[in-house]
Picture 1 (tube, rainbow, N blue to C red):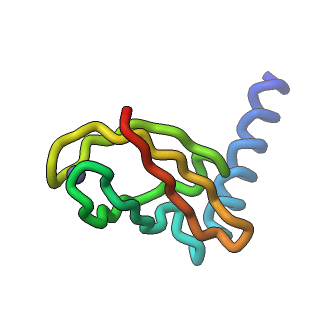
Picture 2: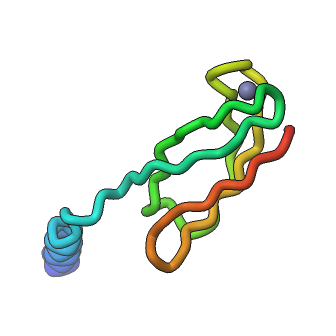
Length: 85
Ligand SMILES: [Zn+2]
């Protein structure tokens, strides 16, 4: 019983700290230039997922899959470099 109660306290502390960061959105917009069609693609980046993120996303213009490398800078601004899969 005591263990469960400790877990609950930890969870509510977590909730409080999340609420405190309401002013900072978890998602920020970043953009990359598609290699295939040259269009500027704006994508939402979830900065809570980590400072370095790699994922594949299909270009919404030409539908070619692009590998996106996301780096979150110290000021919270994401920088995306893209390459062909
Ligand atoms: Zn494209």
